[in-house]
Image (cartoon, rainbow, N blue to C red):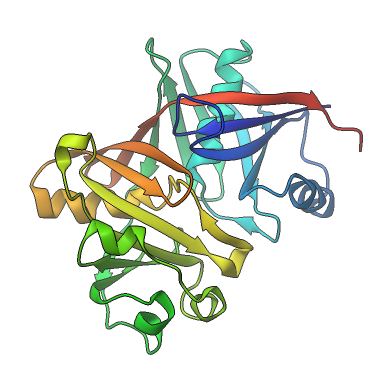
Length: 269
């Protein structure tokens, strides 16, 4: 069967966030899906198969890290939509049935894909004991996110602090359900982005995720409230980065980005 690796939230190979994508006729057993994701060994591998016409969705979609299945993944959804549109398997808006509900992805003429995801709630919480030490940075605020995200959103004092993070990953793994997103306002918005972030998910087998679409469903309402604007651009990543354009629409958040296929091969398993 065909397997592709797509760099998401970038228009250049070898940047953004890579995801594996497999289009199937149906889902094999979970054990096989997990073994493939472990073999691909990227932060997420997406598996999709077409659904009968006339329903509320066009494709079923699931996402696996090398260690576990997750409830929601933005970059692997973008990668899947990119494959569907570039191969002619789908046109216009694609509706996905996933664990977090119905998601849509719409391709534009400029090559971008805009995804419609549920906006995450944000609840201010005290910093858990050991979080500041594990991050190695001064914390400004901490917010818990919705259950389908499962991260702690941690505001740091500035962009430099986010970029300099070298966290204790073992310690972080014990402090949240999925991971920790560290964020700060951009030092210079003239560079084309409004805020920065980095995401660490050792609990689900990902030390650092370069560009986490699902986290931006929490970053968007957080920074939109601060800046007083519904449309923003976020830059995420450490050594490898990508950008996500966000549009807050109440209980939905639109995430827009480019993607590029870097590997198109055959899975012999």
